[in-house]
Image (cartoon, rainbow, N blue to C red; front, side, top):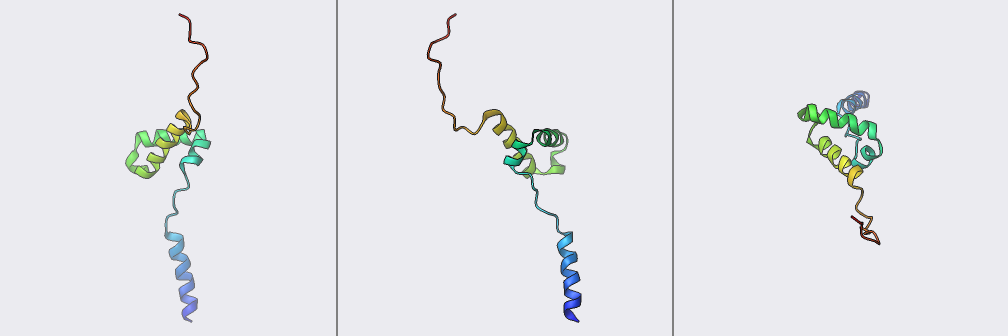
Length: 82
């Protein structure tokens, strides 16, 4: 009898817990449409989305713009002529 009550209660409680955000920096950097949407939402209402997600959005934007930093600087062989 006890197992009949505990199992449904456990399942109900598990369904009520909010899931962890699935948007990571890497997934956002790979999906520019989602990144753009979240950037606009963070700009409009950061408190609603939360600092964690908006910080991930900012880092993904930086990653897309600056790259991963693994490419070394290679200056041109000849200096530009003015």
